[in-house]
Image 1 (cartoon, rainbow, N blue to C red):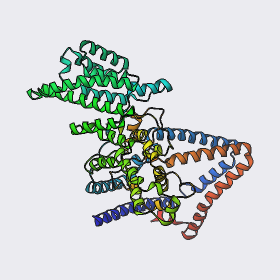
Image 2 (cartoon, helix red, strand yellow):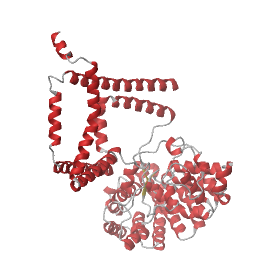
Image 3 (cartoon, rainbow, N blue to C red):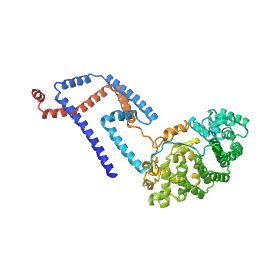
Image 4 (cartoon, rainbow, N blue to C red):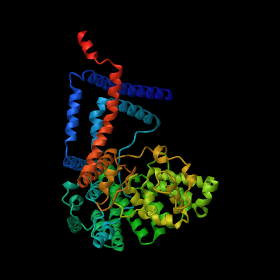
Amino acid sequence: MADMEVVDRVKSWLSWSWTWYLWALWLFLVVLLIYLLRTPLRVYENMNIVAMFLNTLTPKFYVALTGTSSLISGLILIFEWWYFRKYGTSFIEQVSLNHLGPWLGGVENNNNGNNNTNNSQNNNQQSVPECKVWRNPLNLLRGAEYNRYTWVTGKEPLTYYDMNLSAQDHQTFFTCDTDHSRPTDESVMQRAWRERNPQARIKAAHEALEKDPECATAYILLAEEEATTILETERLFKQALKVGEANYKKSQSTQHLGAHYEAIHRRDTNVCVYVRRRLAMCARKLGRVKEAVKMMRDLMKEFPMMSVLNIHENLIEALLELQAYADVQAVLAKYDDISLPKSATICYTAALLKARAVADKFSPEIASKRGLSTAEMNAVEAIHRAVEFNPHVPKYLLETKSLILPPEHLLKRGDSEAIAYAFFHLPHWKRVDGALNLLHCTWEGSPYGESAVGDAPCHAFRMIPYPLEKGHLFYPYPSCTESADRELLPAFHEVSVYPKKELPFFILFTAGLCSVTALLALLTHQFPEPMGLVAKTFLNTITSPFNFLVEKLEGVLPSNLWHQLTRL
């Protein structure tokens, strides 16, 4: 494999060098041809005419020229900046690669390089999965939490895209295919979950309860969206649980009678699991953490196949609140497995437990002198693993970026997941003495940090490999997270982007060109005669090497070479 890569690199280099050699040879032949045809083409006469024309130009011409150049370059700069902000790339660079690249022979080489890179990546690791949006296991209540934020700030914390995904989830969890044919409460609720207007959904839920007071899904909708306090929400969820458990027991005995009864039983199972999980979350919010932990454990034990709700992440957060770190480690031992999907909760909780063992005695000054101990190195590697999975989290944990309410859905490894994790887990990091300090040193001491660590930079951390650049613990960081996060997060939030996009060369070039030409226009307008003299001197300086080369060629080649060639 290594020999093949060397051969491919040599072939690519030879192709590149041969292409540029041909271009240089073509340019040399053109220059030589112009020199040989200088007499028939009247090159000297035309150059004298151009020189006379430039000498007769007034300073007003130079003012107009530089002013026009500054205006055009400014317009190009504005367009380039707009295109970069919208599409994340330079328009000139994209056009150059797409249209000029084939002429220069660069596209074929890039494709070969990309094919080789893709082949090696496919051999070493699995294919990179597409950006998939997940349900936030710790999502807040719309009526009691999201709406209260809107009443206070006047801002909408949820986007339409996020709420539309929730509507699809509710239709999947709480409806079945036969509901639309039944003129009962379930058909009304199927219509309610599709409603966009919150008031219309609440009205439909009350209508369903009027038709059937034993409609569990109607209680769920009212608990989620109409209740304005956690206590009221808990009361409605308890009513939904009472009805849902009765329906679950009834459908459990008839699920084997056919596909229709099986779909009903699956719907009733989803209702029971969802309500019990929400009741556990209500108990956690109301301070009854031990009760919440018991409810979550029972739920995971009774329904082990309902992993789509990620109840173990709710359990980890509750156990951290109880400071039951041994129990947290036991949960991680089960779910932090290579065959199971990872999350920020899994990775950063594992890092927190490793940091807890050394953070209270950690000192950046001592670490920079003696190096890192084995336990400290394990903690730093765990933090690096977590940062490689989601590089957006440290900004929120270190409070260098403001938090907002987490969305109802999140994108793993994206800014939305970082917000959802930090919103609930920041107090747990603060509770462990020195944990944030160790995270700060690791983050700032590594290349992906933004600055040094105060007055005592942690040189020991710079010796650690750069996991974000290698991507050796997880698949390479996906490039689709930014666009998906912009759909999930509200417009007033500045989406965190990784890697931070640098300004393209052509934006910097046009900015410099615009500034220089504007300065020249101003100087020419204020000092016309000196600037005219400077322009002529500049032109003479540029043409002097060409004149020197022509004189040398005339001294080497006979003056009647063209006449002798015509005689042949």
